[in-house]
Length: 220
Image 1 (cartoon, helix red, strand yellow):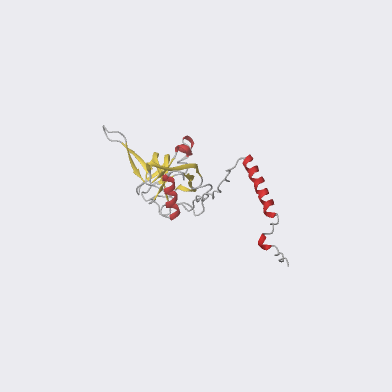
Image 2 (image 1 turned 90 degrees about the horizontal axis):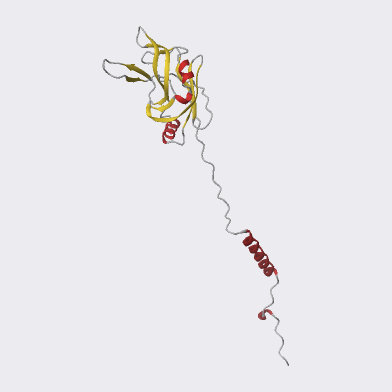
């Protein structure tokens, strides 16, 4: 998403939003629960509005802001942060981003569920163009970008701009119920003595009953 600054006479500065994104490679690296990675922008590739990002365009913003000050949003909505970016770096291809969804928050859980279901997969960047030149065929060549946020979106400007892999949230481990300590140590020892005594009594041979004794013969 490009954030264009416009000014009218006697009016305050306003922001106009324009989505922008780039393809994510088929192989991404994801480490940790709910984390994912990919290219949020590719150098030299025109988006559907004709904007082309030049190598080095993000360098100053990445140095001054860093991942902590670049938001991870849902659908470019500033009221809906869904996680944090852990690494953003320019390489020979474009802007490589690595982030982690906040799985303990409702927004992060929702985004993770939609990613897992295949209902959400796009990446898009939100920025202000600091230095840009108009292209003859429409759009701009972006030489310097002040990057504000990278969003997960439903409809990226490039159809191939998709998250290809996300680390699943593991199921919570089964809980083992704690032992029931209902007796004090003294009570446990007393109960053990009672059980031993009961076992001793039960192990003794029973005295014969009167009915089982042999009948004495009647005197003659």
